[in-house]
Amino acid sequence: MGGGGQLTEPGESGSRRAGGVYTWEEVQSHCNRNDQWLVIDRKVYDITHWAKGHPGGHRVISHYAGEDATEAFTAFHPNLKFVQKFLKPLLIGELAATEPSQDRNKNAGWLQHDFGHLSVFKKSSWNHMLHKFVIGHLKGASANWWNHRHFQHHAKPNIFSKDPDVNMLHIFVVGATQPVEYGIKKIKYMPYHHQHQYFLLVGPPLLIPVYFHIQIIRTMISRRDWVDLAWSMSYYLRYLCCYVPLYGLFGSLALISFVRFLESHWFVWVTQMNHLPMDIDHEKHHDWLTMQLQATCNIEKSSFNDWFSGHLNFQIEHHLFPTMPRHNYHLVAPLVHALCEKHGIPYQVKTMWQGLVDVIRSLKNSGDLWLDAYLHK
Image 1 (cartoon, rainbow, N blue to C red):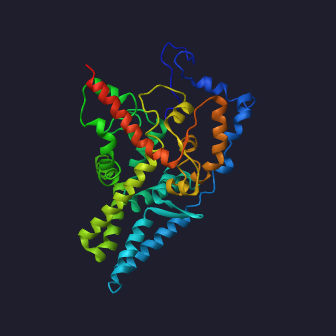
Image 2: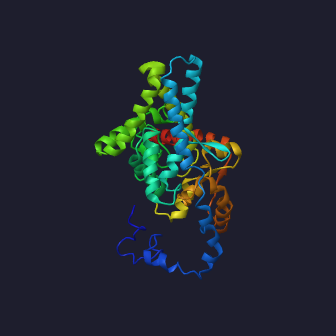
Image 3: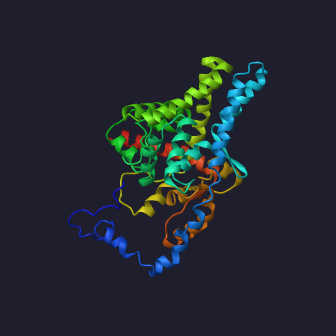
């Protein structure tokens, strides 16, 4: 990362035929505006008029400021009816995961995602600054931790040891290669042939409230990232100040755990249906476009699917144009699809139901591969 393109092996003379890797000189040779393939496909990449108009920004931040003020006012007026107190915090807790934009709500997790991808403001510094505020003060997490993980994911999606999202900590085996390797080596940290069943108990419920929470705190402390730690602690200070007067310390901790529990289910299903059923393997040095398309798939467009996934049901377009505001992916999707058809690159689009079912199906298939290899003498 950060070093440009991939380098050819010594002695290969920079030839694409010698390993399928382009040198920088070969890339430059295709930058002539008169190249026919560029003339034909330039409309797909000329996305200037789609790379603006994010519906969030200042309005979303103002919304959160107003909600914080309202919540503080409610918390310190004990004469309000209990039902009003109960329903209001639940509403605010849910709004802490959502944002208003145009005609439908979007998850605030996606808002920090937008800032992290520099797709809200024109100035990168504004995006970085607001990213720390949103993910830190409004979510209790770390911008640097998120950037470190997410940028690796975009650079090498579904590639072992390079994409942290497929690091399953020996709890699951994924893809078609890892299960066989574990089986041959007689590695059995878990009963992997049942992983499609215990996934429902340890995957969606525990990822955010347990694993991510521990990893974020440990990362900020071990890296001495005191700025992100201060932003994260400001979230918990604000939360406790607003909720302890209503529920007490134990009730406040129970409420935030419940909200994280619900958020974790949503997050796991939305993110994994685009990647987990796809090709997961070691580095094969594919060209960038092929690598992205083999690791991602789309969920078909509909009002519900767009709302539920924050427009990231267009995951292919998101991986190809990561700085484009997500609300515009449906505009470029037909052009990307046409380009893939032209060059014979698979472009997968699923229904929401198929995407969810494929998560379980892929885990079961990987578990079966592990069992076959494990039992093989």
